[in-house]
Amino acid sequence: MNLVCDEYYASSPDPISGPVDPGQQPDRCQTDAVSSRSSLFLLYGSLCSGILSAITSPKLGALSDRFGRKKLLVFTTTGALLGEILTILAAKYPQTVHANWILVGYALDGLAGSFIVGMALAHSYATDCTPPQKRNVAFGYFHACLFTGIAVGPVVAGYVINERARYVGKTQAVLLVFYIALACHVFFILFVNFLVPESLSAKRQEAARQRHREEKERNGPSDWINQLRNINLLAPLKILWPTGPGTSSALRRNLILLAATDTITFGVAMGAMGVVVIYTNLQFGWQELESGRFVSVVNSARVLTLLVALPIVSRLVRGKNGTRKQRNTGSDLFDLSLIRFAVFFDTVGYLAYALSRNGALFMLSGTVAAVGGIGSPALGSALTKHVPPDRVGQLLGATGLLHALARVLGPTVFNGIYSATVSSYRQTVFVCLAITFGAAFVLSWFIRPYGKHTAYFPNSRC
Image 1: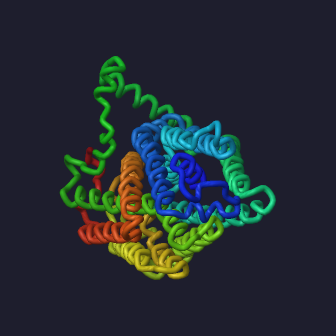
Image 2 (image 1 turned 60 degrees about the vertical axis):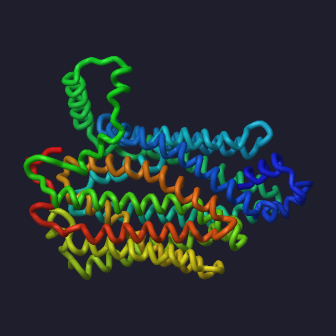
Image 3 (image 1 turned 180 degrees about the vertical axis):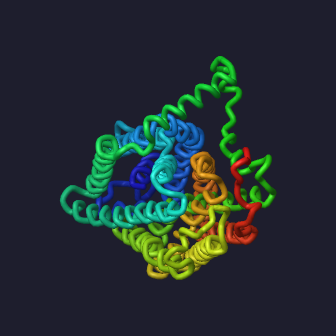
């Protein structure tokens, strides 16, 4: 936002665009014009990363089956690492490295699959090591760890910026946070590469490579022009519409509705992420510290919901041995109740965002919406219960593609709405977000509980 602000005043002279005390820089940047331009910049970044990750995600997922999860995790993190480097260069040398180089960083992150592939690979790793009846618990732990990081990171960054800004200035203080992020990425790459064991045995990797070679031989040789011509980016979605023996219209309906609900909730979360930061900066005058506190409070509520409330409720409803008795033939009523409960709280929370006129109420609205954090692992678990174990990876590849597309459409639509309405009724975007969640809530009521027609049988095909 600071870079966009500087560029705005450099290209569009304004009565207040003369020399400004660095301590007053945030006031100069808290205008509708700068807020709108910042929203559009985030939109362009999401487009660069989202479109490219939609193309590469299924391919990287398939490569992980043939060459192991570790190598692809390192590759994906390297893309984020390069993005951090370009951001640091653009902030440190703004006269030499234009802010648009940050968009190149988004593109490199997208080519490497972005965090979407990272989460899919983590889930694939858990699938390799975890029995089906415990997989939903593992997914929940992954989401809890994700939200813990999101909760702790921003508030630490806010305090670092506030403390360091007294000695080195605002820009250098912000840069320190990016240096810390860079170090974290380097540490993660080294940790995964040297200390984390590979979940896929060499035998399973070789078997996957052999199947891939056989498929290529059956398809026959072709030059690269024909290969490009035959590329079908939507091919991984075939698993959501299975046909043949062992399938049914009820199964197809459940898979489509679950995938649609999952994609909508993910797309709304992605679309709201950047808008919330820009909106609170303009509406309440929040800086890094206040924004960090907000993100920490909201995600701490998500973590408590996932690690405390959800296990307790599951134990009360299903009992101590409920997981063992649970059938792997579609979602049960408890799964569906969790999904509907989560989406309902998301809807209420975003509607409260639109009605909140002070920072305290806005933060309270965030904690209400945070209860909906149980929706993602519940949806992921419900989806995997509709397919046999040997198709879970294929299913996660399909949902990864949908998430990548949602990452493009969500920020595109909602950042565009905010940019267009910031000067008239800037809460319009939250009304639209609440309506979108409401649509997902309605869809969830058409999903049916398990039965002999709502899951794959071993002789089914795609």
